[in-house]
Image 1: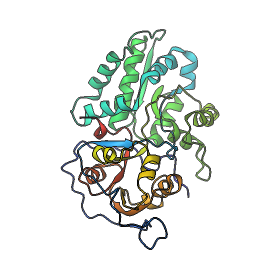
Image 2: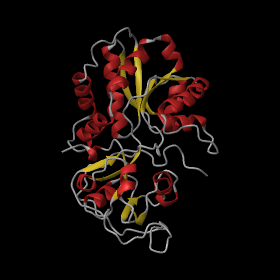
Image 3: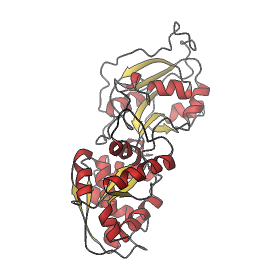
Image 4: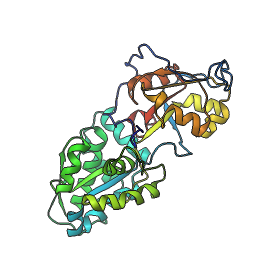
Length: 333
């Protein structure tokens, strides 16, 4: 069975990196050894380099699906008030991944409330001006993790500025909130493009989402119509699987993309860290090997974008590890 569009579910983002012990790291079928027939291991050009700051290497060949933030709206509510999608699209016009990282860090690291962080963002971006035409109550749904809470409050604040009486309601996971959105119990929700496309399509035997935003929107549109939903414009901001290194590692090699990493690391010295399923998942180790031609000396079993993986990268135990692209731990200190 193939992996879902996003095989690692978004988690509540971890705030503490330095206190997380890495424990016993495993190794599984990675190839990259002297007997593997690939590049000979034993070099050290791309061995782990410790450092405090993490940086994501650009997925320039679109290995990961496009999980851009996109507003999901009940179709009847959208038809009744065009100002609803217009206001939410104004958020998509300005929202970037870097801004999402900063907002997540403000909540998870600096311990500000999601409501305060959202209100500050709306004011800083001028999103409370230039929107109008709304009226009546609107319930914006949120899942029970930081990023969803922040985005739902951003949506609610902008809708309030547009004239709606908007509130936020935490609904839970997608299996709960999507039916509630379809029934009109909530009217809007901050969604993830590729993941919601695959969820609505529902067939594990086929994959309709991809790394191309426009193609994935085109696949989603008829599915949404059948489900009684309408989706707005996708933001540049995305929360998807990503691969991070320390800035010291990236600077020493002069790399900012995964393709550049492959060009620089032909000696098989890379050490990959991530969840136990990574060596078998198409968008993790096999994808890095097949799409980018990367060759790994070993794999360390850690966690799914969590504190163990991030600490292992920082402490120089792995060269590169799987994280989430909007994790607050990526905020530039």
